[in-house]
Length: 369
Ligand SMILES: C[S@@+](CC[C@H](N)C(=O)[O-])C[C@H]1O[C@@H](n2cnc3c(N)ncnc32)[C@H](O)[C@@H]1O
Image (cartoon, rainbow, N blue to C red; front, top):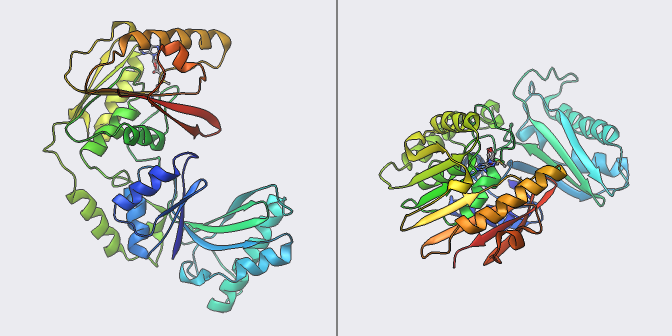
């Protein structure tokens, strides 16, 4: 099988390395997605273990099409009955950009028709009740290149199963995991987030340090598929669980001025099984100090959307510049969409990395010297 796992723009290389590290072979990064080939075990493992990908798709077909006949034939050629049983549901959704085939409802209809025709030939039936496991078909058409996917994941992989509720401006778990990766968090490290909100960054850091696989506590679409052996799913889950480590010294500190956010963070940390590793405390950045030998600060400070908020946020960048002192064994990893961040912070970053939080262009500023 060929797989394609989409990820946030700018994270492709990191997402590919993460999958390689988790035992997936032949991984290659492309614009906005990671490609690899493998079997059912790779499918299950990538879903359970990927920290940075949004989903794991089976790449059913990829071809050029500028008219409906070509679209129909390209879709029909794929091996649909390998995955979709006689009673399974197979809804179609997708998008198209800069392409001759621009009507989404029309493309949906043609793709559905092509899959039905192929399944009809295989199952010798004229009616599909679609009452079984959901096999979501996704199409993407970009500059007349059509990609047809089958979604094995269900709810996106950033949904780890630990977020009870989210705060005002929660960071996506996959983006938080990317910051943890960029900051090179290890099992013996101490991490702080002075603007922790609902705790996403610290929870992702703790789970990485304890080697808790991101998807181990949640369900996936493929679990309702007849073509995936439940014993294999069980085996992969057990394998992931057996690699968790509690004998590590990782500890983290989360601060925020909002008591409700802190309460949420504590609850989320409990659900994520890392509450014993994170201390959450009410504290204003203006009162932030640290006297630790070694510390990684990873944070997502507020950035305003209205002018007044922008001014307040910018004032905080100056405070951070004063508080985040250059010291040996200290690093600061900060995400912000504000292009003037470094000037306001008062120092040029040792390294910066551009990435997209949805459509919002951000930079991760890294200070470690
Ligand atoms: C962008 S949010 C962080 C979201 C967090 N990463 C999450 O995933 O939930 C910024 C946070 O900074 C907090 N905050 C605002 N001003 C602050 C200050 N002066 N000191 C500390 N925290 C502050 C807000 O309450 C908010 O929770």
